[in-house]
Image 1: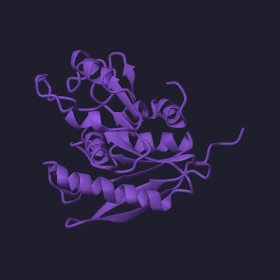
Image 2: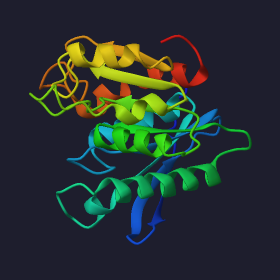
Image 3: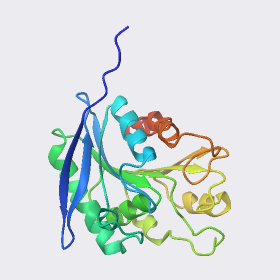
Length: 226
């Protein structure tokens, strides 16, 4: 039996307007049917095990991923960039992803928590992505279900996949379900017992947890039931 050869990773930089260059990484399998510009959460950069594991597994599913740091991570800061800067980063990475994609290849955007939310803001503001993938959407701050970040979602006209843990304090089912009911193009893949990083226990390896959801995401991107 032949061993699976890992998809090589290309490293480069992307220029973000008024912020300079940020690090980026592309995993592109030879048989890619789609691309996904993938953005990290607020607390860690593009090389966090969750991000790296998910990118590796998506390549195995035939999806190219381009991930990059937001400028604050590149600068060694802790506080996330303000939305205009984050959205400009999403736009720059999306353009880089399109430039590297095959002819007629759909290019999606999404990410973990903050990265997914900023991707959705970019799409709501006109970014022509084929669809959105949320790996734990931060619908409201923990313990504050009255502060729902949903207004921009209702103007989005592309498919949206929400992978959401049922024990995620950033998106309790009681708040998430009514929002999704008003989003005809949204699909929920609930992770029973999962937290904000889709983990079911503290002992889980983040790399493997993220990788386990790649088949679900790839099916959704193909237009198949999840």
